[in-house]
Amino acid sequence: MSTIDDLRYIPRLGLALGGGGALGAAHVGVLQVLHERGIVPSIITGTSAGAIAGGAAAVGIDPYDLEDHILRWGWSTFGSWTPKPGFGLLTHDALAEGLKRTLGMDPLVEDLPTRFAAVATDIDAREAVVIDHGSLTKAVAASIAVPGIFRPVTIDGKTLLDGGLVQNVPIQACIELGAEHVIAVRLSAEWDLRGFETGLEVHEWEIRSDVTVLNPRVGAHSQWAVKGLKDLVRLGREAAEAEFEDYPILHERPQRPIADDIADERHAAATAGDASPDVATTPGPEGGEMPPLRHLPSAFLRRR
Image (tube, rainbow, N blue to C red; front, side, top):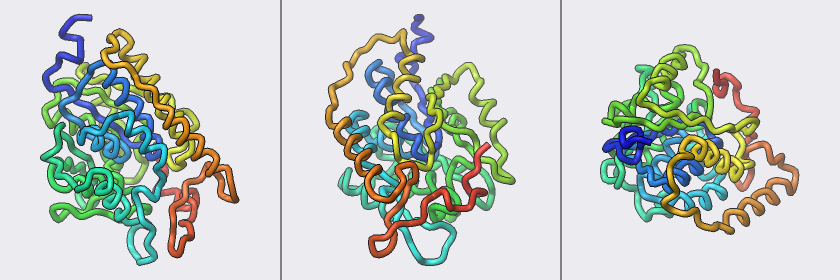
């Protein structure tokens, strides 16, 4: 390949990670392959699940360690059930606590080693908000605030919800931050809510010559269930390996038996007892569980 076409030599390479709930595990596989091929983005944007993976990458978390982490994650990793009335069943307390346990602090977005921004939706203006400063926890919390599930987040006086409402694949945000070429990872379709029909607009960004789009074949995997995360990591790897097969491997993939052990433990736990492994649940009051997500209003969850 020529130097011009080699993404390793682009001064401001961007990575735009799309939303998709539990499908976001595929982002981890993409991050691993980029590391192995020596493809290092200098700008990362993320929407919803992409904000979680992108934030972790921008912080500098090893992509293989990240796989070990996500295999233990569930909805309770990001949300705490609350009986108090409000627009959403979950608060973001668990996310804040988990981030502080992992990093020992809640870093500022502007202080991260790699430039990062999370994309959320200003629910009043019905437009994208690119959060590239302030608390990393609040930035991610705003980006993942799925309507009806998570409580909205207020930043700079704006009421914010999931960025997937307006920019499910945050290519535009990445280019506006200065990226000369963007590797974009799409996991799911656009939201289909009245007033947020943005699919065509996002597609126009995807077909640009300065954008490389990866589409992991997530198939029948559900964005609402945390079953099969290890398989999703593999699917993300496969999509990235196919796209970048001409790039030499500069860093060998380490052996990670711990990931297999964690996946086996999760499968055993999911198939034991009365709970269906295909349904994501979240701890509720007094050790109970929140109703399965499949029972939430379908209007909030429908995508195009």
